[in-house]
Image (cartoon, rainbow, N blue to C red):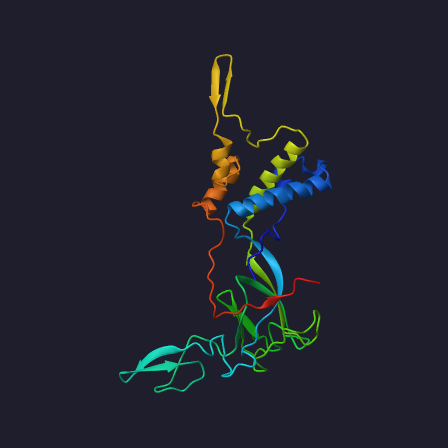
Length: 272
């Protein structure tokens, strides 16, 4: 499951930077916000915005595997030296001199970055974040590992992926994925959306034109070529571009990602 190809859940603070905003139609407001959000989301490396996902994490154990292969740390071999000899350690083993790894006893992988957990359902029952005594039942490590620490049970070993949508027996996790939008970036979107709306109704706006040189009454004015601005992922609005350059000075097109064939990602129901 890849990072979404469009921004989601960007706050709308346009009225703070655009006194005439309420005079525009709802359709124009929506169009201007969508345009400005998409441009600035892409210009800042496609890294901001929270998306709600409901996934079915893979089970902790591979079903029907000859060796019952574990993938989430239970089968990650860790070499170590004991009394001058090399040994392999895996979580739960008792090798020479004992064995300790960095893997929790009970975890499943969630495609990150995980910002917050909305709900966790196992066999139709919601697992609360905290128990009656106020202690945590689960938490998230490294923005991608869902760790269960209560004494009831671990996550399902073989999560059913063949269950129909809405099945009460499914193991499903609903969470917010991504990074929240900084307030300054939301303000930049508001400024850009306001100028776009002005241009649509024929009002004077600050969006740059393609004119690079003007001569009138003996006075010549040269402007920056708009093509140079657009090639650098900028907008032509100085306060907006200043923020873009501070967040994404090298023009990175997307958030760096790490892929591993050892981490099967949970499935997301996309239809119906």
